[in-house]
Length: 205
Ligand SMILES: [Zn+2]
Image 1: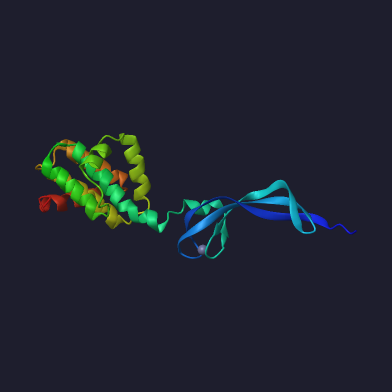
Image 2: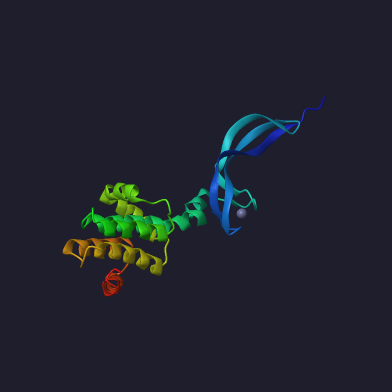
């Protein structure tokens, strides 16, 4: 009897998720896969052998394949949450540099986050945000700022300025905080000064 044997590479799935597919141009499901050599008998893989190469990311829609670096590109769904997250962090910084119990300032902070796209946000989350370590907040702001347009980043600072202005003119502490928030948002000093001037002019509304 003739025995036919050989080697074949099969891709195994080691993870799944949603990514931004460069070929589809949108959010798609992917499979993270890794190749392995198999010993085949009559073309049927029977014994798994060594792994081959690295991992690949395969789009579930167009079946395009990429290296795992493609997973660092933010998805559209994630991008949509970034403005609200940054407004949350910015208004919490502004509030904690002034009177954290000031009712109108708190209301303004909550309203700003709602407008930015997070309707579930409330005073409890605000208190939790204000209790977060500075380093953590600053790192998260810098990450988010990197994917937003300048106008959106200015709007985030504007929201924080309006919260700080709710209890009267900016104190030195509030102004310093807004300057730091602006820097974390990757805004220049000129941009920060401009945003604060506009907010003051409208009296924080
Ligand atoms: Zn695709």
